[in-house]
Length: 331
Image (tube, rainbow, N blue to C red; front, side, top):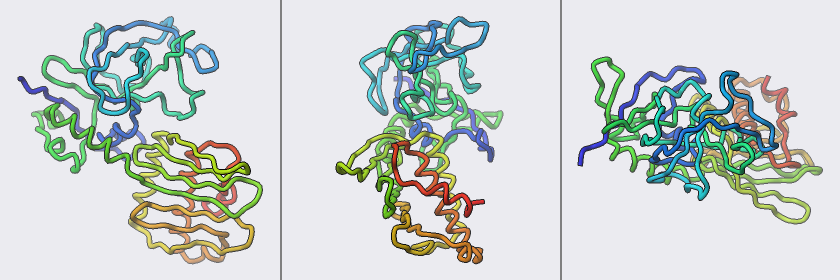
């Protein structure tokens, strides 16, 4: 059997929000990933969950969609209903020509950046979710003949054989076997089921205490101490939230931490954040006098920032918060 090859553009990651996604980020951002065939291309109107028509280019009567038939699923579960993916208009990451049905593709699909079901889009007058290629359209690559072409992805040293890419004469094009890509994606799916971060808020009356455990695949378990008893919520944070968390954690290497910041007062909000396997920090009532120490201030602000990103990733009503009070310390 001839070996399928993966062709990808390698670029240095810019230090902005336009950085090219790593394979790890593609896997984390995707709700559904695998190898599929494009069985139909069609222009179709799209609407919001409230039934409002989604505006597209004036030159088009509807969005250009591709209907996919999955051959193998690497992450998630292919829905029983038809899988339609937005092909155009979408982000500039789409650089592939999909003029004819029948193309074989590798896809990393999401239901959209927002985790709120009301923000999802649907084919007009149906309950069919419109999927998008993850990471600003880069989660799509076409299999042409015996090669896979991708938008620009980055590979990490942890990707093993995928990181030892054959560089082309232009210094950018590289090749790896598809047989190496599939098990690496499946390994990342398993790895990302591990717990990553925990957060907790308690001690103040008027709102509900809660505990959160976030896994590396963006899924979380939220336990809410409501008046009627404990509620359990299973949901996801957005891909952008996960990227913010990674960026915040990367800053920790430059800091020295205490186990607690602030002072304990009866009836005052208490919170904690835990980077599982690394450190746990308790946050109590802060005082500007404490922040006169520069090292203390940097670590305390980092801790408040990490808590704020985690708390901002959940939208359940009535939960203890504290981010408004934190603003004066983060300025």
